[in-house]
Amino acid sequence: MPSILVVDDDEMVRDAIASALKRSGYTVLEAADGREAAARFKLEPVDLVITDILMPERDGLETIQALSRGAGAVPIIAMTGLSSRSSLYLEMARTFGAVRVLEKPFELTDLIRVTRELLAESSGG
Image (cartoon, rainbow, N blue to C red; front, side, top):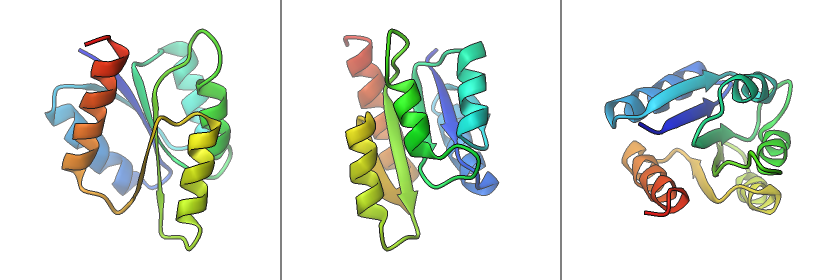
């Protein structure tokens, strides 16, 4: 069963995403910011990361850079919203290593579809 790390400082958003992923059969780890995400990933690497961009401590762009480099590189979905600069942040996320981006608000069914596609691609299936 693939494992996914969900990173978002908004607990309600994080819980909604985690619940939808769990219902779809995934193992889900959660982190409230990029610093916590890096620590969790180091202890328990995952198959996919879904991260918000605008967060305290370590933002999503720094997190994407750290997790998309090297042998432990993992596919990353970046998400952000509620900002006049959302499209700029999402484009930066792509530049830094995110393989897909979603602008909030989005449908959880869209997130599940993108998650399935990425996990299939990364497993060679």
